[in-house]
Amino acid sequence: MDTTTTWTVTDAARAWRLSPQRVRVLCARGRVPGARRDGDLERGPWVLPAQLPPAHRTLGRPRRAAVL
Image (tube, rainbow, N blue to C red; front, side, top):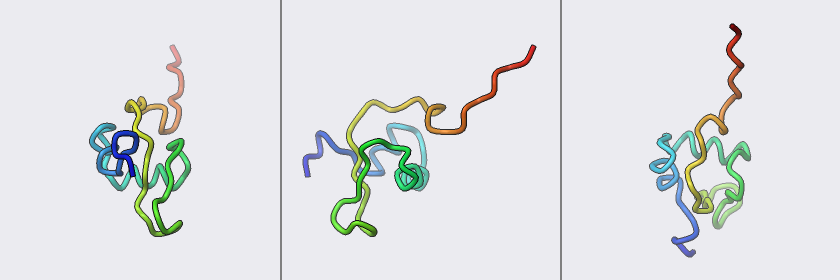
């Protein structure tokens, strides 16, 4: 595995300032493009493409516009 082009869950959690468990949940729900399981399809560790940290708001629920 080429570590310059991939991240572990811990690497992504540090870069995105999230907990490792939250990163795993986002991967499992398909919210991280390109995330895949390494080895065993259901039990292997997550491998994520190395990328710039996404804006944390794009991963969660969209915010409502403020009503004036």
